[in-house]
Length: 294
Image (cartoon, rainbow, N blue to C red):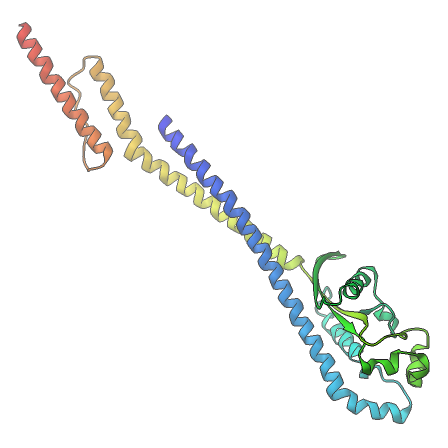
C-alpha cells in the first residue's frame, strides 16, 4: 500500500500544480474578458452619444435656429453636448451606474464643470496633443468603473459663442450669464467626452465563473484520483503484494504455495510468469537435492 500512497502523492502534486497554473491563467483570462466586455460597452455608448451629437447638428439645429432668432430665446436643445447629456439621463433611469459627461474646465452650463479626476483627463489631453483617446479604471461609489475619454477641441464654429461675451448671442447670455464658457481659443482642448461604465457586474460574473471552474476541477481531481488508485491497486499494488507474499513464504521453506496468475502481456504479468518459473525451478532443485541426499 505504501507504493499506492506514493503514486497518489505524486499524482496529487502534479495535478495540484497543474490546477494552480491553470487556475491562475484562467482567472486572468476571465478578468481580461470582463474588461474587454466593459470596454466594448463603453465604445458602444460613446458611438451612440456621437450619433446624438451628429443628429442634433444635422437635423435639429436647422429647425430650431430660426425659432431662436424669431423668439429671441436661446434653446439649449441646439447644443450637441446638451442633447447628448440629456439623452444619457434617460438611459440612466434604467442603468444608473452608467454615465456620460462632456466635462469642461470652463463650461457655459455649470453642470458640465469637470470634477478633479475629469480635470486630470483634460489636462492629459492638453499636455499631450497627439493623445486622441484615454482609457482607464477608477474607484467610484458603486465599485470599480472603466472610463473612456476623447478630447473636445474648440472649432471655428464654437468661437462665436465662446470667444468673448460681447460676441455671444444675447439669448445665451441671458440664460447663462457672461462669466462662464468664454475665452476659448481655436483648436484648444476645452473639454473631454467621458463615458463611465461600471465593472462590478462583469467582474463578479468572471469571479463566479472562476469559482465554478475550481469546483469542476476539484471534482475531476477527486474522481481521477479514485480511478487512478483503483487502477494502480488492481494492476500493480495487489499483484506486487502477492509476489512479495509468495517470496516470503518460499524464503520460509513453504514451496507448495500456489502459482500466481500471469494473464496478459504487461510487465506485471511477465514478472509473475518469471517468478512462477523461478519457484518451479527451485522446487525441482530441492527435489533433486533430496534424492541425492537419500
